[in-house]
Image (cartoon, rainbow, N blue to C red; front, top):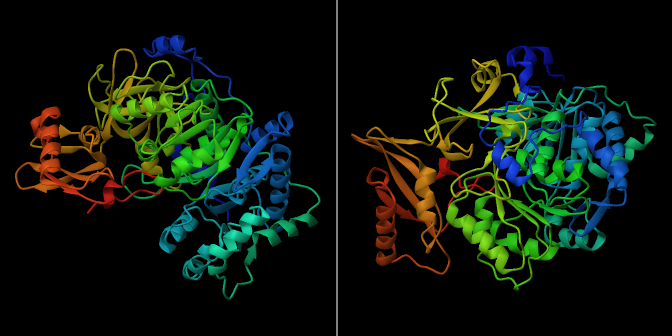
Length: 582
């Protein structure tokens, strides 16, 4: 079933300046561009996702494109696999503008499908494979998707889903499909044999059979869709907490790839990235895969990981480029390495959550002590603009900042709920004007209008829902999500700031601060804390942390209580989940 694109486009009401706009010479962050040798403008390729991959496969055919559990694939092989997958999608009836839901972890099948669908003009609807039956059904229905590519362990949910949403075809992949023989056999013994697909229905086909049947298709119906048309749907909670489909184009992804490469000059063809961030997330699909494929790098594809295994993966695969969220780096620096064991690392990027100055210093020191000159670079972004659009120049990290707008991006700070500009160093809502900004929310015209607003300057600005400030040099400081901000007796308390102080205590591993109702103050902050493994809670440690906060925080922002836990709930991309702390 096709999405009604004209209706969607009418609801967006974007000005042309959201994609093409004149560069302003007044941006205060341009001075930092000069110091870091970052271009003010980039000539972005007007190509689809598939065309970018095709160009790389022509330029670097023998270069490694990805590695998956020891199985390697070069770019010539990857483009051939992608073409073959496109034929298989045609064989089962997928046409231009049809929506195919990809409910997969980081596997070759999942990422190949994204580019194969793009070649024939279909839309990739990206969903977490551990989604509940209701969540998966919602995403299928929201996108009007009749086709599903997922893992065999998801099969048991399909009977529930198809009671309300019938699917034309379901393709089931196994984690072992792209493993080498030895690893695949080991997987079967430990996990694979436990996964049973019982009573397989007629509309269900296994990945290997799906690919085989595509051989009967002699030619590919290559799409004529443009790079600025809908290519991918990702999901985000958005401004109301309700899941929204975020419509993104090939052009959006190309922009993120080129902007991030400009700010990370060490990235080059032949380098490798530890690609652990998931393909159903902008950080994963946009940075860990599409950026990699645009510039002839290789993706070390990891479908399942945890913070404790992060260091082991780095030791095993020796990636040049590491990208992760703060919780991964917290765990990473607790490990032991030889003095020169990290010499292969050239770039370290952190996104997805606020990096504290304390952790930034620790990671930089850790890298230097173990043979790497890489210093951690912060990226800020949101799914509505794919990934990081505010980035830290390699030469100028300011503690507590999230960097400066990337090339061709503009940021302003406005009074929340308005389009009124605020002065330097005054907290307000961060607004972004960038060619990376989404097309809009899927079938959500009101939400789209709230997020994408035309200001007095005639440009369309994304209202991010984030509170921050800008200094006179154009450096941006993130404070909190507007929804997370705690208002106590009229004072604005930023949980991220309180957390950064608590996390800087030498005995604390990680913390989260949430609002707790109060009879007359309205709200007060409450802290949940995980101590480092080598420490056990004592009255002395509790008192020391409380005194530490009293010394470094304004009195109105002191937590009213401190709750110590063994672990904290995490989101699907490795951030502490403040919504589910109980």
